[in-house]
Image 1: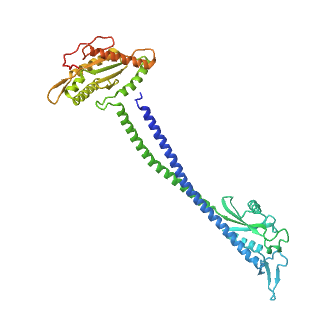
Image 2: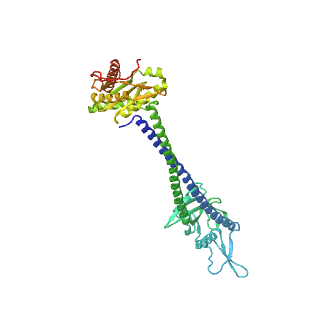
Image 3: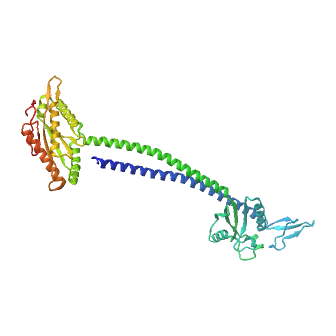
Length: 436
């Protein structure tokens, strides 16, 4: 059965759980953001490095090409294996000593350098154009995209390309038409036009694998950080939950406990009584209440002081606590008045409990500091729950009215006795009492 305040405990537990989940979400978001930022920063740094490398290779080729173009081409001695440029008019000439030289224009120089570089395997490059004179310069799909972009003002193009098991970084820069190009390109271009591009390609498989390992490392580090923070936050929240539950329990005990006697107070009894009345009505079970009041208690306070009066109340509370059954609820109802709720007990059974308690109180004496003995008695009223119209609320009012009337009758008939709703007063023992 739920104890009073159980709902508040559930609310507190729910609030702590919500707080813990909120902290977890914040922690996951924070850790994810930090490590995602680290990964993206590293990735961008690598991307910038690859782009810089592509630009450097492209610019180096353009510088070499421009140097060749500045001098209108370069003549080299024509030896074994050296071929003349078939796209130039009269590319060869013979010197006075009979040595034959052939002209290497910018395009041919770049092509021959690219062939030399390709043999090294580090990177490769070539000149490409949408309208190539040399069939070997026909663009591939990525180069077509880049050249189309150059036509619309793009300054450069770069992308990753997978070929088999390897990944390549592609960088393409625009190639500007110059006056030296007129030797091969007789018409269709003007100086300054974009007539093609320099396409650079180099293998980045090792870089990509290193980046993948870096990703795994960062993910692992993020998971480790998450569980470390999870453990710390869990311990903090768990400690907070324990302290809050303990504090709530203390507050609950203070809220439902009488400070002087340590018994449950009136508020607690009323909450339990409503629960028990509902249960008794639903399942047709008996329920009884005992209300008892210390006889002439005002005289005790007036004669011996409130300190002795408090001692009397605590003594009676201890006696009643020993006499009550485990299922009964005992409370200090107010002042010198006490009440016991007895579930599944009829009036006859409650009267027997009340009589036993009456005898225990009357049979106990309190030794004062000056050696005198103080004898205390109590009057008891007993009533059982009746089925009445109006539901639980009306049944509660009826029960209180009848048990209060029974107590009033017990006091009116001489005190130190038990009165039920229908019974006459029970015989009393000979005790010393104080008149009010």
